[in-house]
Image (cartoon, rainbow, N blue to C red):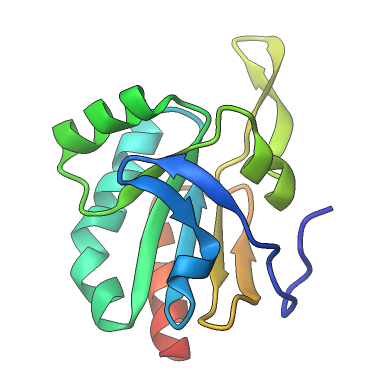
Length: 154
């Protein structure tokens, strides 16, 4: 069961491109966690580029961005370097975070049912409370919407 809005997100540690990523390390900052299906795919690349383009504005608003998918750290390192992302990518191969946030869904892929990540974004405030969530995200204009919300918290 995902955390309810305005409740504390349980502490977690996950493997990321910059080493271990701990929720508690980001207390006092706004954390934007965006879940995406797969490295190096068109929609996921566009979403990452949009977050990277707006990264300075998120930083000025006191926010940290992290992308999450089930890809390996090795895959993430290549994707991050290729796209020059200024934020960490979290590897959730064991689906610990996907379960915590309830983002695994059955999806249709070329007529077949497959388990996959539903593109979703979560904003956690400086005290560790979940403040906003977007599920079933469509990439165009999404980052602008998240940024506007983050700036309203700052």
